[in-house]
Image 1: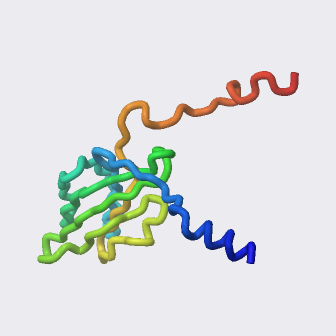
Image 2 (image 1 turned 30 degrees about the horizontal axis):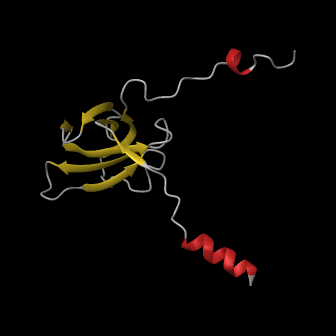
Image 3 (image 1 turned 90 degrees about the vertical axis):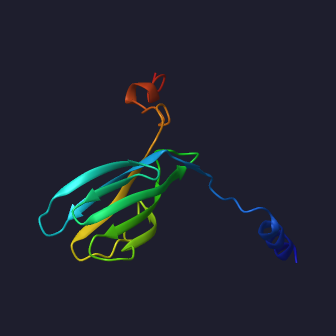
Length: 136
């Protein structure tokens, strides 16, 4: 009976969801599978870039608020000049590009990261700063 009450209390509380922040832009990587050519493309929200036959538009890019260097998510609309409808429209996750991937016989596009404002990344911890006072 106590276990059921605890379980009910846990389930009825607010969900612990990770908060996301919107970035002004994002960085994508484009690959031509036929020629092996690659390019990194930096776009701001709403901007389009043409690579090969593809027109890639970044609709949104967001990142975990608590850890900006962590997993980015970008909403993309990708058009092929030979096709009327978008060949991809949706969210791509940087750490899992195959989860929601562009299905194109010649090209591949994936998210690398969001463009973050200056100072948004945490400072790197150097061995000197972590070992001070240890072992003395």
